[in-house]
Image (cartoon, rainbow, N blue to C red; front, side, top):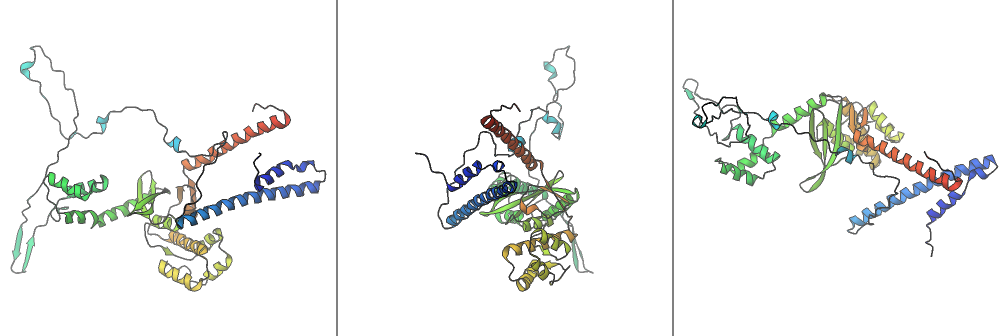
Length: 420
């Protein structure tokens, strides 16, 4: 028994049988062509809407604790490649050339090894040295007893005490502090294992002091981070940005990577939307907003209706507003503004402030993928080579697919054989 076709397949099959060129009336041919194009466009839109509707149903079922529609991969055509990822190209093995590792090894000391003279024959001649570099490490304590001079002035009633050298505060020196922080953050050692390691090499440190050393008084590191980020933004007119998923205390968040050939910084945010990206580029958690000419240009690009533009012009213009102040104004004077348009308004005002502030360099060219959260933040947007290459691969696959099918059409309908 033949399988019954769906209505969409029946309509598609019917459309393929209609050839407007067979009609003699010119106006009828044009009308029929327009109608066929409209039907084809509607068929495509109906298919997309059904797929989107199914995704929403699956998500609704998932939130209810049920299972959505199982994901079944469709059969791929042998001639058309739908996967245009450049992952393989990025991991193409390169020709291995072995280089001397001794060139990068720092020599701390030189030791001359003598050959026992008693074992040498009388005619042995000295021919220089054969060099061998041996790498080793020595973990030794450097516990220092500082005897600080102390003076007292009866006339002033004050005691004068010599200060410790820079880096020596508390009970531990800079070397052990650097080692502990490096092993904890760089080596992923737990605090328990760190205490065990320190005890084994003769260092007595309490668990409380170790915890405070690792998670408190990090102002110097934050200052260094801010300086590196600002200098990195100043080093080039373009910056590369990308996002990846991250788990923070069991919660899914997003890590933003900003870099160029001279630096790389990482910033983790709760969301991956455009407002989060704007905050990352400014290196701040709390955004500020301003209404100016750029704001309304962006609102036009965001397709926000003109009536909301007019109402926003009644609010303070060219005035920097905090997040609390700006949201309060929107709640008061634009209370009927929908959530989607409200998000666009917040984005436009935040971008406007970003471009008029001077606390951190403004990025001119943002190199990234074509995700919507990166668009319209900077004056220029560019695709990195990995994502740009996918478009060329897709065009190449489509051209090959079309040429193959055209040859089949010519052979099947007209009996014509084509070589190219």
